[in-house]
Length: 146
Image (cartoon, rainbow, N blue to C red; front, side, top):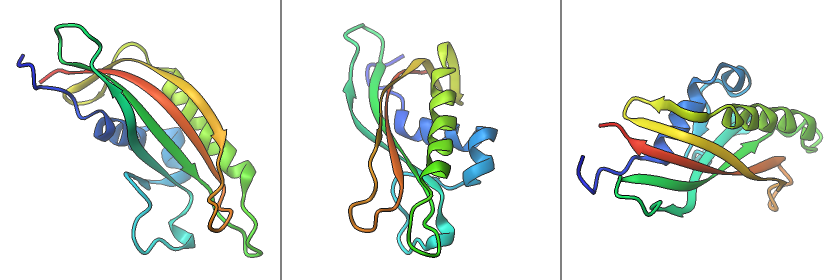
């Protein structure tokens, strides 16, 4: 394995979340790297995934200790208020899925995670329109198996 064969942790987490039935029941396949351009109310609820930090573990293997932010976005009601309870349900499903990754587990073909740790879970509504959002920060220890 070469030194530069680091895994695409961000992409692996996104694809892994899409495949989780408990999450797909709520968002279908709406798991993105950012809010899609032209998103309308029927685009919600959805999940966004962004790498916000992390790096090498210090070992000789090309493993990656990524810090990933997973935002769980809720819907707005007809009167403009956010569905905080529904958003919390989605965040709980994402959190439970992440916490279940202990020991080595394949996220997607070519990327194994040695574990996931939910570091923070905060209420962070969109300042522009009060759209409900919970932001989870997750440490993902991953290695490329290609």
